[in-house]
Length: 484
Image (cartoon, rainbow, N blue to C red):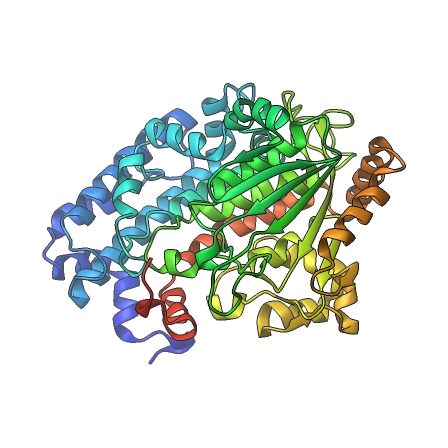
């Protein structure tokens, strides 16, 4: 074993990738020629884009000659890892020099707003190999998490570099704060009928409140690839409806044997679908740049002034965002992603005995933006205990008062919600949202969030694709014994 814990085989892999690939049956001459063609940092944007596209396409041709990560021999796995490392190195070099140029090319110099999904799609077409194509992602979704080829890391690299640049990062955040088209399409139905059924999510108008109810009863109202888009649509409708002043997030009644016939706020990420490969890495970014951020900062409906200073906490400046007050009605459980929502709402009502925690350590992923936000509520030490060591809070216990504004007995939630909605709206929406936005300006200005998400984009991709995540799901969740 050598210094730093690396053995001789690992050092050979790092310093002689051509030899590693040759042992896996690939042509040493072709590999050496390909390795030498990696573009450097001194090219113009267009020349660099063309060169890295050719380099990455050739690298993909090599990986296609090898079995998938779960089926190959040790030499074949080492070859795949060596090729992937060289390709990611080329992506990093290109993005470090040209992420801003690329984003300008894809958005007509920030005059066109593209959501993440569309941004990645057009980037895949503009620079072959830089990020996976739609067809490659369709194939990746058919694989179990342990069998994925790791192509999603490229998405994290691109988004991280775009967010790291203030101008392009603010513009992308602004694009993600726009309402989704379906929200406009269903808004009339909400206003006419007072309710909209979006499948796993239901929206109901009740007086001046809009109730967002997550309805995923089999999985204790967990979030996954099925619930994400309907949840964002529901948040948008509540924010768009001028007759709604307060949004309420609540879990529906579940049919789980442990909680029969009761409401559960949420059990976090659907780990079963994660283990079976149905949840993409992009889920995390779409969630935290999408509906969670909209709850916290509101929706935008005008073009982003990317060059302007952020003085209000809004990417558009004063008067350009629509935001409302939000209440969380926590019953029984607020786990993982459900607990993260408590950091962005304005008032938390919890039934006594409800458990609130972030099982990030056992899962092996980053708990959204909780690493940024939770310390503001409970202090740095308690936040570290929660994120790194699994500390829980129980509604009704003294330490949980830092997270819960009200604790009520089971059966009293409806009454407590009505009273709180009246209290929040009786002084007028303008007053309430003005106080909300000024509180946010001092706590989490847009650039602080942008910088956090730039790091999160890359690190969460690495966590999502780590073998440690698969092991954690098998050990702590018995994921291999559960079916979707």
